[in-house]
Image (tube, rainbow, N blue to C red):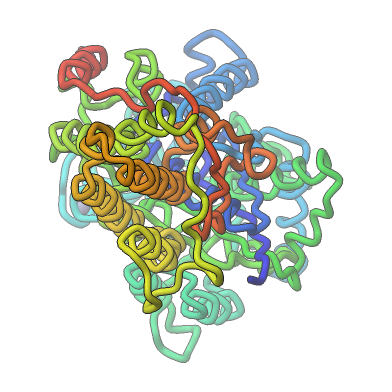
Length: 579
Ligand SMILES: [Zn+2]
């Protein structure tokens, strides 16, 4: 196996609100992928951070009567607590309000400017005369210029998907003061994405090496135009500046002008990596230089594809860095078939889920069952959630250990039989008995499960794993250890030992296969069921233990999973009802 080096990110949550279950789809998806890579022996650095700049943070801090710095510090701690609670294991969780980020943003801006890719233009901009500030697109509301839908934001229409300039909006009002905005002129800095160099680069980058999912690549073809002539692209230039007052980084040589938050947010991935490198004695350039052999992989929601597949790669390419290797988008979460709603209590915060005492690994497992690596939306159906957790995790998985371990402890002094491994391993096609055949199925199916993890198709991985759970339970039903134990025939004892040892070794293999999704319970199983230390540092199990897990005995252990009760869900929903 060639060891891969991977720099991985999830999108940066904005420092203006609580983490909810919709956010968690992405962090859980990324974390599962990260854990799978780590336990497969690859080097992986998973970086994330709070996205702290911009008008919403500035206005909220003002409303709370605190400084933006105090607000972002508080929210950072809340976000980090929630991610940790759900087992999301970043190598580093940083902030975009950092010196590293300022330096990197300035450096990229200057590099773009030196290549003639920055242009300063006078533009018409909406101004709130009551609040004395220019209004960001999201703080202007009005009617969509294309379809006429009412109450749309100043940058895009949720009804028809049109994107436009806020000055095009019909009947605009300021969402800050309610005043009718005036149009005023202001000098803005633009990144010339329409420059033929950018268009050419992006066309080439986007369509190579399976960087993007097919649906995303199609979107990009639409945005970039498909012709050979870069002048035919529809790509507009990107306005990267905002006027004071603004919470962010001031643009070099342009007093009173600030970088638009969306410029320094993705650069925050690099700032986090740089800070991690400094703390760990690693070379930042080895990850980010144009000739780097590290894979740079971004997990994002499909709503921010535009930023991550146009602006970000072009900023990196022309800013002196390497562009991303792959960008993977996921769909949105619905709850019981509908958009999350605060009035119905389905806008569920991560904090409330943990406070209500629900097991975070139930949700990790459920999301894993639903995520298939595409941009499709996924639905959290609570009845299905209850059924699946109870059936798969309690009824199938944990049950294997509780059906067999007692006999081994009582009759065989806790020792597992270890003479069943044929020399040369378990190879499909060779002659083997029923017990070996069950173990061989695991070895035969593991590569397909690994492939599904790699492709982020955890729906397929969990389906395959669930079939393996069924196979072990069927095997136990077939050999009936409880009957062997009380038959009184001496010849049944070795057989009982064999059946229980085989089942428990397969249970250990299920722990290997499930560890990316259920890190806590799989780690507990290693320690509490088998009395083993983690295989390596903080990896309880390694992927290659599928072949022959080194389990020698079983200990006395408690419940690995409790059942979820529908009443727990009802009280969670109740706790989230607002208004
Ligand atoms: Zn519209």
